[in-house]
Image 1 (cartoon, rainbow, N blue to C red):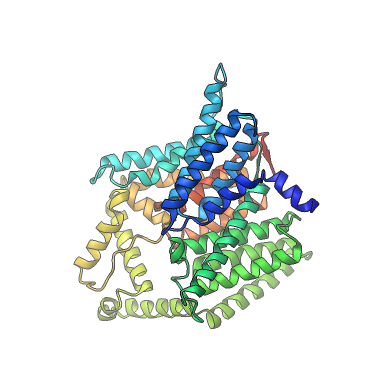
Image 2: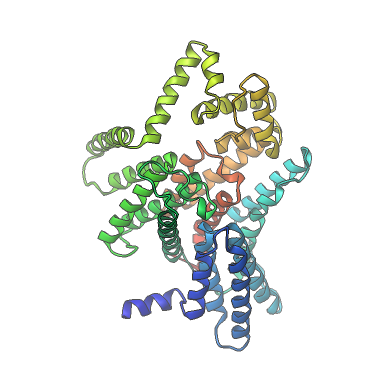
Length: 453
């Protein structure tokens, strides 16, 4: 009972906040239009309670920031509503004070603002002008929220934020298992449609799960626990099984690499002995993955076939199989590099990447090719925005590593996304932008006194 009371006190849980968490967790694509009005209604009542001195501003701000992290995996409109509520509340507190306190913008916040400016300029230059730029408005809203937070007596605990995030992933996964069983969609083979009921494709759900596993491993290296040590190991195993089941290959690879790093840190041997052991572990993981995960085997077999076709100039095979996943990725990478060589300064327009490259591929006779984006975030920004903007994006990552990778949380977060971005253009969709830049700024906030590990 004492432990439950501590959780309620630490996470500002009461009947109203618990109801908000429940409504957020039920915000599926089919019913979010019902949950959002209820969330807004409870929020208005919470504001009334705040005005009546029944709750404190600290309770309100902590509750809704925690909800912001919790809502990441659920339907994007709900996350956006909670983000707007957070910003409006902190702006209200700022303007309520007289005079308005000054705040110094930090480099990470400034970099996110500048990067949005580069994206906006790119959309202004290229046709269709500004169409689709609303996706990147979160690059204004997140740093704005953190600027507002710094003015308030608000204590940001990365440990709490990570625990809330992991809880959200576990709840979402249990929901999806239940729903798939109910609709008789739970299969014994790889199921890439597992997360469709949540409105997320398997690649993005794999990213959410993989990041949760990375955080659990980081907690382990920090001698902290999500529940208990054994429970944490069970949760990690359970989530890895889900990753395998949905066929999220790169998320699984990222998790394996972080597991190897974690093991390396914990083994008390000379570095060369540790390196040898880990090399054996990695080879073992690769062999097991190849023989037990169908999508991994199919992917590697496809790569082998593509290599043989390219080497022998077998265009017939490339055309006939251009609809297949790995063949499509090969073609889009090849044509993306060609576009970069021709438009290296300003790119071809961030919005035009998918259509322009796909059109060139189909025009060259690959008639079965289905339009896809570059499936590589680095190439996407390079071909879409040119070398200067691409180098700025790389600098954002380098700066983060140099200044904030001193904790396992931030380091594992960065490593995981560096791997994911090799084969996925995750920062062209709201879900990817949200999870990456929210945690980018959370970890960057540690230099402030209001940050608590």
